[in-house]
Every structure is written in structure tokens, then in C-alpha cells.
Image (cartoon, rainbow over the protein chains, first blue to last red):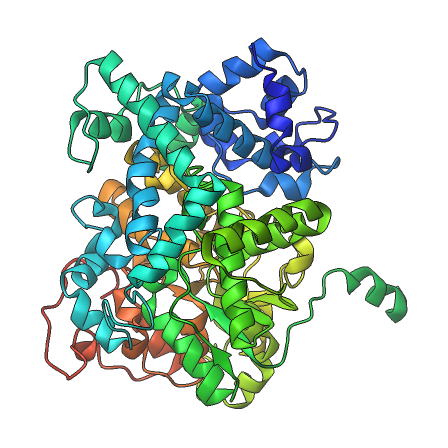
Length: 249
Length: 353
């Protein structure tokens, strides 16, 4: 089997993010994800530094590496100057390159992020723009957003912008600029990563017997990956906090 | 401690912010949810402070949400950011002013990487030239846009039409300040006051007459978590983190929350609405919600800008009570108008409306 630790060491973020971890657990103490999920960044880093291929492979195929929210609070606190959040980013990249991400429920969600954010970038030049945030898919955005979205052109104009104008907020990014972006993605491996996510996801959809389409978001596999929740991700502590919150009310 | 010793201790928490001539890069999230805030920042810079701030419409997303959503490789984002540096170089600017906190964190991460791993800078130069034919100089400075408002906070105070003071009681307003995690948690030296004592919003609030609330979960993340909000099944993570903050700040009765990160400002407004809908919980004095402002809106109010021209009506928690406290007369009937004054339907179900 390929030396996975050596592959990780090729990622400059991994080299920067992991010195010798002494397992103090401060990263876990400060981590918002560790409060909510069955997630322990101390343990992830400790497993990685064993350099054991089988253990690293299990991490790449498992749920835990997908729980981090990349707030990077761990970087501030680590007394050894490690950054578990950067180690996680390197693990996630490798998991996707090797196709292991489809073996976990949380990992499979990468397909949705690629189809939405990834494609917004190359189509419109933005990760998100106002016309991407449909209130029907985002009820949590509330009545203020629904109003803004419904009357987007008028609302933006009053604030000094022009929807699809040539400058200012939410301006239209010209086709020659989008070509530059695409070219950057081709030269730097961005396009290859998109492709790796697509190929592994299509294979997984077939294995799971779910409909898959090569474009868009309105089909079974996409809906499955954005909504699936086996109920085993959250901590008991989060349940207790919820109970305390409800009791106080 | 002697003054000299104090200065030495605090030296690493200081940051040089240029006086003028900035190249402005917008934020995907801020231009989407707070387009009026970006326009307000530019107006303050140009009209109130007389600064030169330039924007090239050919700049794009930095791809930061894709990068922290793990679908954009580091090599790719380095090259996209290098392209922005190339646009600044071509226009003759050396000081970058960044609207977004995610972008700001990415710019700092990239510059630090290039410093510690010089081969990555050379590779990025090669990649950018191959992809676009462009070349770039490294910027002399990078500032978050809130750093710049902080630098000129006293000048803004001298021009103030209003203060962060309850005009009826004469007492300072009580303000929760929230700093986006990627402003200084990754590279403390790039933030004013570092990660432990971020002063960028505190300085503004205190200069403009308000009191800052110190509450237990002051430094907790708002809960964006990138994939934790982007994917529907994970959103409980995001909501749970904001709820933890609201529960922690509520006993201190804040008059409003202010954030320097557009994502944080958006979530801390949106999740208050969601908690009301899900659990029937409304935070704030008299259970009317806690208005959540961007720092541009806060600065704009101080300078007498029309809250509705800045877009404050597009928050789920409305600010009418806060405006009244500050002595600002703003007609609620003028909130939802077009640019030429035609009336749009009023949204229902806003908080504190």
C-alpha cells in the first residue's frame, strides 16, 4: 500500500500543522466541534503521528475528519504550535484524492459542496451571491432575506449596487475573467479535485442504488447526501446542554 | 509595571495600518447579505476621511468558502489570491484592504506560507503566469477593512452626529463585540490586539461612547463551520454554537451585537429568528431580539448615515429601539422603498419591528 504519511507530508499545511504532539488535549478543550460531535482533535493528531498506514486509512474512510468547522481556535491554543485544523485539511484533501470520502456519511457531503460552491465559483466568479441563496432552501434566513431576495434588483439598487452591473457589489464577472479563473483551476489541480469528487460520488451512488446526474442538484444522490443523518454524530453532552436550555425556558 | 515594560509586552499586539491608498477586495458574503455595508465603508473612506481606495471590478471571489469547504486546493487559492495581487500591482497599489474575515485569514495564511516555504511562492508565481500571463509584487500591507476604521476611529468620533449613548439616561450603550475567528486566531500578529485581546471593535466602541460587555463565551465561534452550515444535515452545529453565545451574553442585557466578520453578523441575526421559530425563544431586553450590526453600520450611524440607505432593514432583528435610544430619527415607513421612493410590500414576522 502507498505510504499515506508520506503523501500527507507533501501537503505544506500538514508539515506546518504537525510538530510533535504531546497529547495535552487543549485543542479538544477549546474545540466547538468537540462539544457538538463525537470529535476529538487530540486523538486525530495522535493517530496520525503513529504514521501507521492502516490507522491513517481508517481516518480517511471514517466520519471524524469531517466534524471540524475550521474555526482554527486550536492553532491559537496549542503549546507546541501544532494546528489540528490544518492536519484535518490535509487529511480531507487526501481522502478525496483517493476516493475514501464516500465511505462515510459526512464525507459524502463533499459532493454537495462541490456541486454548489465549487460550481458557483467557476460559473459566476463568487462562492456565493445573493441569487444563489433561495429562501425555499434556506428558511433559516428568515423574512428579511426573503424580502431582499424577492425584490433583489430594487433592494440592491437602493443600497448603491446594480445587480449584474459592471462594478460594485454582486457585479457580473466578465467572461474573460471567468476564463482566467478556469485556467487557474486547470493549472493548479483545482479541476482535478473536482473531477475526483465527481468520479467517486457517481460510483458510490451506483453502489447505493441512488439516481445520479452529471449536472445540477435535483436528483436522489444529491438530496441524500445533504439530508442523511444516521443519528450517531452528536455527543451526549450536546443533548444535555439542550435539555438544560429547554428547562431554563 | 514600568511603562517601558508594558510597551514591550504589548508590542507584539500592535499592527501598522497604512494611512492612505488602498486596493479594496470585496467579500462574497458581505456583498450578498450586507451590500450596503460595503458601500458605506467606501463612502466613509472617500467622503468622510478623504482617502484613496481603489477597486478593480475584475477581482473575483478568493474561493475561501470553497477552500475551507475542502473542495479548492491550497495551490489553487494561492494562485487566485496572487491574481488579486497582480491586479493591485498593475494599478500601482501596495496596501490591500479586505472586506471579508475569511479572505483576510486566507491572505495572512498565504503570505505566512510564502515566507516560511519560499518554494510555494515561486510555484505560485509560475502557476499564475502559466494560467493568466500575469505577474505580481507582494503587497506592503494587508488590512482588514475594520482595521482601517479602527485606525481612524478618533477622526470619526470628532465628526460624530450621534454616539453610542442612551440619550434619555446619558448612559453608555452596552455592546457585545464579536471578532470573526479567522481575523486573529490563526495569525495573532496580523490582528489588532492579537487573538487574546482583540481591540479592533473595542477601540471603535469605546471611542464612540459605548461600553463593551465581557461575557463568558465572548471568544466562542459563531458556528459557521463552513461545511457545518453549507450542508443542511449539519446546520444544528452552527445553530448550537450561536445559541451558546446568546445564552451566555443575555444576562448582561446587550443593546446590540457588532461583528467585523460578515458571516458572523449574518448568523447571529439569522439564528435569533430561527430560535424564535423553533423554540419560541427571543433574546434581548423585553424579549425583542438583540440587533446585530456590521461595524460599517455602527460607524455609519455615528456619522449620521440613513440606516435604511445602509440596509439595516434587511436584518431579521430590527433596530428601531436601538435607533431611538441613540436619538436617531428614522421613519420605519421608509424602510422598504425602491431607490426612487416607490413602496415595496412590508415583510411580516420581523423581530422588534
